[in-house]
Image (cartoon, rainbow, N blue to C red; front, top):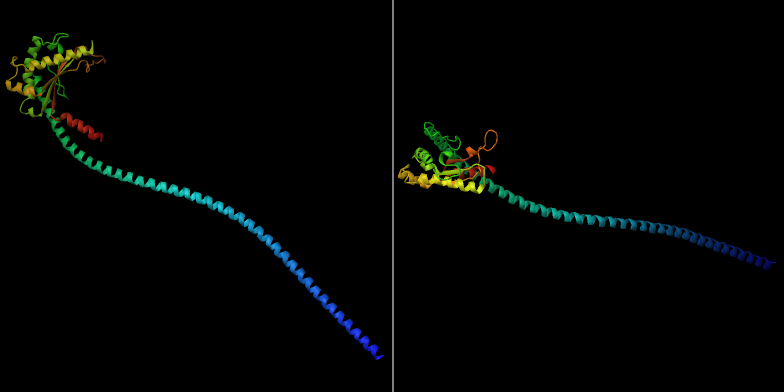
Length: 305
């Protein structure tokens, strides 16, 4: 009876132990299952996170590529701007050199202008003196011939004296008529006495005899005729046989007298605007003062500058 009880007790013990072991095993299984489930969940979460990170990386890679493209574009732009800047710097440097050259040129021109202004002032003074001499000389010529029977008109501006060609020559002829010689014999001493007087001799550079014709006929024929007429008058002026001038006056006159023909290049026009043929056929006596033309040309140049 005891043995049976003892056996039952042992059996109960082992059953309890087996149940306990089974429970522990189940517990371990549950723990392992739970652990694996938890690990699986964490794995899935990590995998999901990883996928998200990969997508983020892909997006970031795309953005980075875009950034690189932008940076590359900006670099290209910067390179172009740098080239433009270098070109501008070179241009500015060249411009600076040009400006420096221009400034130097301006300084030189300013210095030259000052010199020219001083020269102009000096020449203007000379011109004023010459103009004064011309005015006095013209006035003296007018006084000389206004009281004569020669009916000679003196130009108020230039001092030129004009003769009708018919007084000196026959029509289309170049030899002085007796009346022409007589006229010159009365005119020349008075004219020379004024121009070659001690008061004005040092100012006279030239006494010019000009022959002029009307506009009829050929220019070359009229040119030859006007030249021959001017030369005839000059020869008579310088002729010792004419006994019109003194030896001293002849010597002085030879240094300054000249003759030229102008054909019909400078005709005289009437009030109706047409050529006055009779007035155009003429001989003119003109005078030039020393340095007068040079001074006028110089003043014109200075005024242009």
